[in-house]
Image (cartoon, rainbow, N blue to C red; front, side):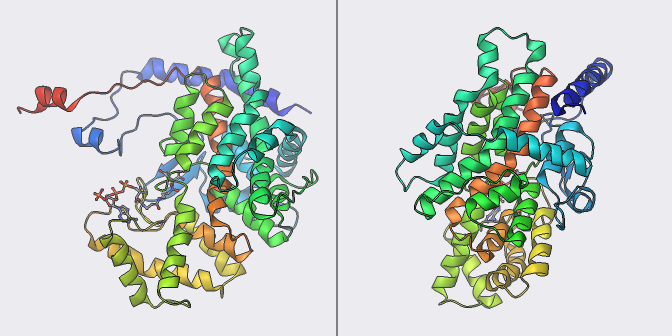
Length: 435
Ligand code: NMX
Ligand code: MLT
């Protein structure tokens, strides 16, 4: 049976040729124009990157190599007896551009289990941090401590030929993905369970083992984590974490450096940290209203108060999407099936009924609908993962699959250093201000 890496290496040559031929034939084709407002407006709507693993459509949501989330829930292999896709499968799809079968997914799982050993110094470095250090900071520090293991760093120092860069990048990406759940679980158990750590169970799938190391052996929670790890993997290339990982990687920084940089972006409240902010916001609202299920009117008043205080309503809005995030819908379906009467689910559902109309009323919010973060915390809370400061770490573990698959392709396709130009207001005024 062919090794996974050999299988990938066979894909490279034909894809390289395809891209080279395409650039030769169409390299001068103009695909858009840039408005001055876009330079000041966070470059919204500018297609400026190539990311093969997924594409986000504003009206439809994310597709991974052409497949929507409901299609993947149907087509990707499942754990025996389970209903949710295994994230090993979506990783394979993103990297190989092929739907895997059950056997292939098992091989990815086993491959990661074999790579999952963590050098002891990583735990010591994490243990040296004060306990109040935010879990995302501990996560980034853990990733950087793992960098001692970088194959790319060694190969580069030994003078590797650029045509072979993809190979140590593949090794680094696979090792990092294999090791992240243990690092994340270590941080969780250190902070919230008196350092009572749980050894990995290599007989489990990647998410199942992660759940086990966190301390959750309930099969329904394993299913939730499989869904969670599948839907957070990738969101095309322009989101802050994916873009950062690609940008830093373009300097030939290795996978550890690039991924750690991206995780610092994910830790921002307008990006991945929003998942903890949603729960904080809901709890603050509940506390202010004296507990229980708030009425629609009470929620509406609280939303207006949030806006009047000059704050955002976390979990709503998106830079690209213009509809309810299908990742929100996938989580809502899970809640409706497994916990329709959960108190927090009732609140999340009512917030969904109330918020969009109020955001629309502002006249400025381009997308009033909920994003992925508006729902994820409720599901975790239901199963007892109540420490919401930790939620972005879960997002980060999942995001490794898409962004590192992309990084391998960046190296395989020989993408250059990313270095866009910038200008100044003065120069823009000189050039365009008189018209
Ligand atoms: N609550 C209040 N105001 C908002 C919201 C919201 N949820 N969303 C957008 N706006 C405001 C935004 O702050 C901006 O105001 P101003 O002109 O005063 O600066 C205005 O509406 C226009 O913003 P948009 O063009 O609609 O949104 P943009 O593309 O700039 O930002 C987000 C996208 C996601 C940063 C923004 O919708 C937001 O801050 N949402 C809340 C935080 C959140 O849920 N982030 C998670 C995104 C998903 N993820 O995981 O990364
Ligand atoms: C993401 O998953 O990265 C977020 O939805 C943010 C984005 O796509 O910009």
